[in-house]
Structures are given as structure tokens and as C-alpha cells.
Length: 265
Image (tube, rainbow, N blue to C red; front, side, top):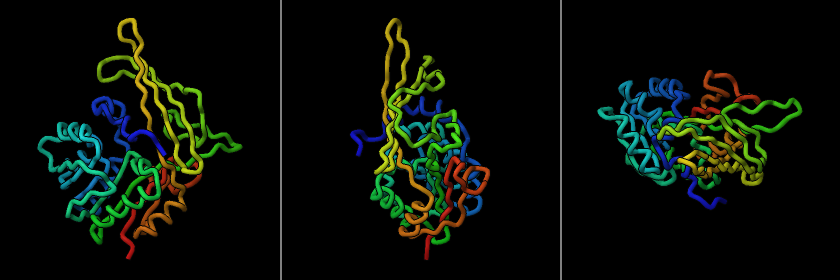
């Protein structure tokens, strides 16, 4: 399906932190930690953007990620906090522990591109989830161009599922080295696989020469009823479902599908 490891966007943890510095989702997942108590497991924790604030509230947190450099960055940011950082693949890890809360955020669920990947992830979650615990995550709500012509979001993340071969410019930014970087992206949508393939181009000047860095990432889009069936057949029931971080109901216009699940008995 892809000819890369789908991790190119995470090769520079410092620059990743500069571009992903928002507190989106932190309050939501912290409130679930308050509701359930610890211990807490974040899968695909990255550099600890959400795990660290939850640990600062006194919860025992484990952060799991497959990219060693992201975990090194997380450790450097979390000195003294009760966080265990574990390198592992979300599809086959075994921590020999059960957690009151397990979550993924940053739309990490979309990195599991195939049905087999999704089911492997959910199998590991179910094995590690306390019988009275909660499992929560969000994924982007699939969007289609309609006659109303809804605008795409300015951050370029909540977009129409369509192919655009031409490069689309994003706002320039300053990277961790102080360079002004011009960024653009193109995208290809595979309708059968339900996967959107992004190619990002970052360009900057070094003296008289222009440098270009190309990264690729593929994102799976799962539709609401498909997601409900997937969770049901893998042993979960949806306790709560939202369309955004303010707790609004899921609609066609919602940016996200946010689910809070329990084990199905």
C-alpha cells in the first residue's frame, strides 16, 4: 500500500514540537484520567505533548511509541515526573499490566492503515485495559465536497478526500534552526483503501542554494458506522461519542469523531 515506513514526519522531534505545540485534546484526556484514575497508557505518545500534562496532575503514566527519537525528546522534557517511556509497536506490545485509561491522540489512529492493523491495535488495547477502564481516541471525520462548498480548514488537516496533484502552499514557518521554511503539499486519495497520501515539500535557503526536504505520510479515514462496527467486533462498546473537543454531537460538519469506549461484556 505504501513504499515508506510512514514515520518520515517524525524524524526531527525538536522541529515536530515546534509545529505541534498546541494543547488540543489535553483537557479532554486529562478529564478522563480524573474520571478513571491511574494508571494511564498513551499509545503513540510522541514527545509527550499530552502524557506530560497528565503526569503533572499526579497520575502514573506510561507512554508508548515506535520512534526512539520521539521518546528521547519526551524523556528530556519529563525529568522527575512519574512517566515510564516504552519503545514498542502498538500492534504487538505486551506490558504485562492493565490500565484504567488507554488513549491515542493527535489522530494517531489514522496511522493504522489496514483492517489488520486496526484490529491488531484494538486487540492489544483490550488485553491491557482494566475491566472497568476507558479507551478513547479521535480520528478526523471524513469530508466530501458538497454542493454547499464547505471551506477546508486553514491548517490543511481537515480536508476533502480527493486527489490534488498540484502543490498547495501552507503558511511559512521558522524551524528549530532559525530558518524560514516555505511548505507546500500535494495529496492523493485512494478510494478503495480509504487512505489519503500526503507529500510535503519544505524549502529553505542555505546561502545561495535552495534546499528541499520531502516527507510522506499516509492516513486512513474510517467512517462513523464503520468505526462503530470495528469497535463492536473487537470487543468494545462506545460509551460516548462527540464531534469536537467541546462535546458537540457528531454531524457531517464535525471535524472529528471522538469516542470513549468500554470493554464489551
